[in-house]
Image 1: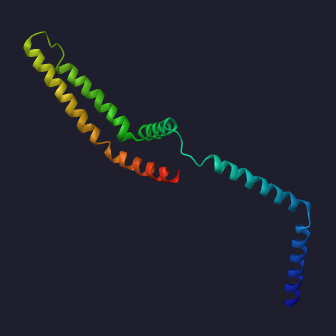
Image 2 (image 1 turned 120 degrees about the horizontal axis):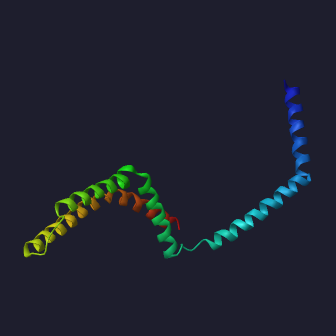
Image 3 (image 1 turned 90 degrees about the vertical axis):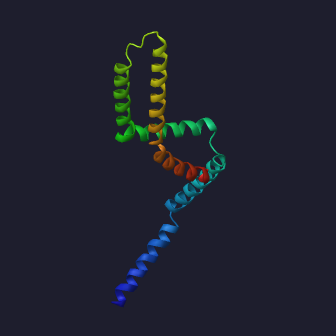
Length: 141
């Protein structure tokens, strides 16, 4: 048993010493040094934050992609808005030009603004999640 261990250790030491003296080892060390220099240069360039325009584009792209993928957030809302537009369009179809129609237009605008306000509150949880990601990325630069 000790004979096989010593022969194994000898074989390992021979392999290690031959690798250390080989051209492949020198090439690997040179490549590692070259990559380390490139990484340090790229890290120096990326120390600053992205510009305001790039940040806005990245956030708009991410938010749009999340909304597009989420059935309840985007597509269901779109269906609700279309149904609301059609139903309000049929109810308030021929207003007329009398003074009573001014009151009807005011009622319509009040209803729509109230409905849109309450529908926008539904987007608040996703905004909180986006803010967590934004703060983490802001801290990481």
